[in-house]
Length: 71
Image (cartoon, rainbow, N blue to C red; front, side, top):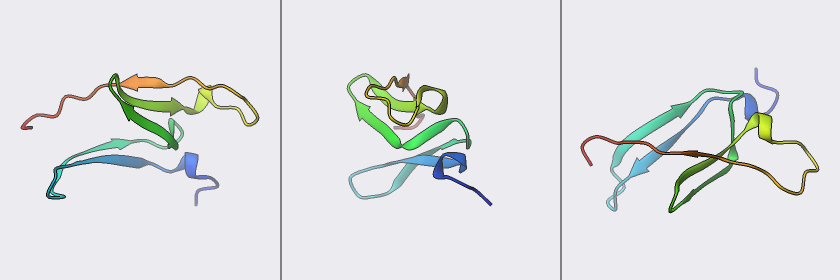
């Protein structure tokens, strides 16, 4: 059993305009907070658990870039 969502593994899915699954990128639990993930021009911004403290007013993110073959 998991106590919080932060403990669960999760994945992001890359889909095309016809909603076909192009790629799926898995993440282990206890590493990132999926509710605090964004995509911008720099890449995929994901908040690491060690960067998050309840009550903080500012946060830091990890910028991740993925190379997806066949796109």
